[in-house]
Image (cartoon, rainbow, N blue to C red; front, top):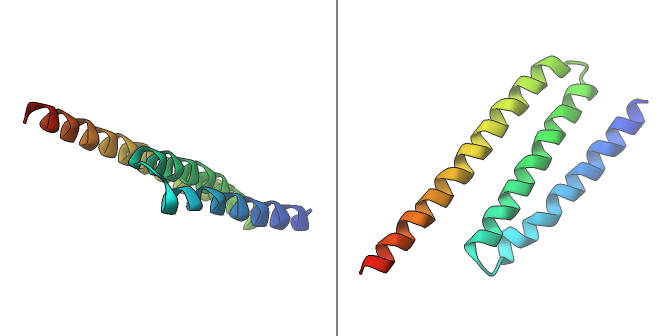
Length: 92
């Protein structure tokens, strides 16, 4: 059964690397922001997988929740920054 979790974790790491291309070569900042959000959501799943592997799921869920809150607040902060910079460009 542990081989299943290791295989799933490796597959999840490969899936996390796919949006990395969009972060590096995204045509717009918003594409990059969405890719970072997708990577963050998949990383939360990866942290939970580590909890299953180390038989300490309760501790890793707390870490995943903290990471989810930081990912959410970071996305809102970046969106607010771009919204604010857009209004400044329109006024000038």
